[in-house]
Length: 120
Image (tube, rainbow, N blue to C red):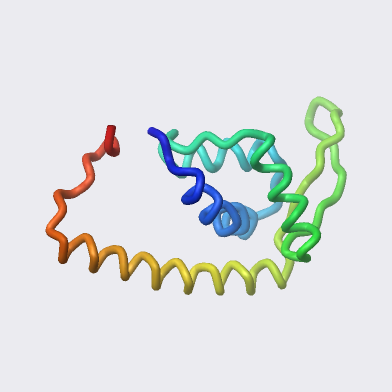
């Protein structure tokens, strides 16, 4: 399923912060988690994720540290900060308002429900 790039961009920060709120993680694991959470319908690339992680780090929302994988390779781990938790709470409040407004619009417009597999 194709998801418009504007929706991907708008949801990226809260998704990553939400994933990291469950515990520290590294890039590949975050990519896998996004795919899992979306039922395989969102498949981010490294080129989309790492600039976002670097921006979140510069903003003070995540901290990063180097660690090793089980195979001994160096891997950068990311962890949400207190500022990131506050930002996540604010984003959630914002999304709740948007989701409520969209729900009202869709109910008033009497649109058919989206199919289980998404629109083709």
